Image 1: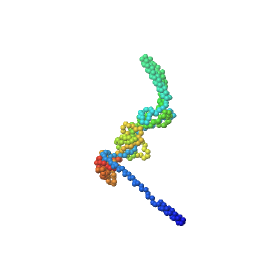
Image 2: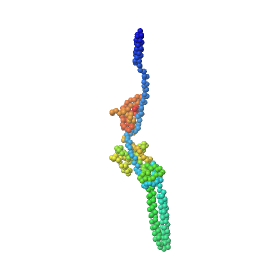
Image 3: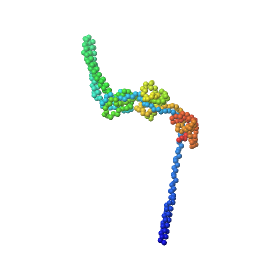
Image 4: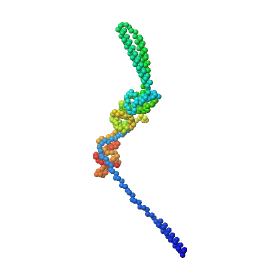
Length: 352
């Protein structure tokens, strides 16, 4: 009996284990994800522009080089001397003979003053001697008594000798004094100047001030575009992102010293800037050379015109609907195209 009970209990445990195993072996249902949220993009607005009337230009903007007609860098001819000052800054206009920089020279100025005073004293002495001589001659003529003027002549010779020596010394002092100053050799504008710190010493050959004659700013153009240039014509120039006007000039007639070209020679043209404004520098400069132009014509931006094979067309907005329309074009410029047929001024073109 006990044996039967044990067997029954074992069967119960085995059945329970099989049941639990079967429960865990059942497939597990995956969680249901929420449906994705789809954002509807904003409707892209229609880009339009109107057919307008204006000028169509086909042009190039080759770079040019700034050529001051005259430029000179100046330096002291003596070294190791204390600089008294540099009296100009970049952009200053100067006149011929203006002192631009100077060395300390008190001893020279003192010696100059002494020599000038001595010259004046000798000239005064000579003038008085001549007056006495002339008076003696007049007295002799009035009294018919001959006068011995040899003492006057000897004294005059001696004084002239003194004067010659003093004037030679004075000339040497003036030349020495001039070596200690820098003067403007011509009217112009300062394009570079040594920054003066207060205590500086001269160095032979070191550029102190550079000036350029800017009465007529000249620009040089090199390259194939030169063949389009006409002497005497006015051209638009962009200089440091500002607009100017310049005249094409003949360098031979103007007596312009042509700069030496590096490498193979290229065709060249020259332009003189118009107006009174003077340039101290021209880092970026370009000239506008118009190849072709069509004035007061219907035109559209190049980017809105479609060309497929021999067919040229645009999309015109008609009753809020974009409609393809064939057109005919004339001059194609740098940014605009001439419309010769198919559109009227004010019509709205769809693009982009």
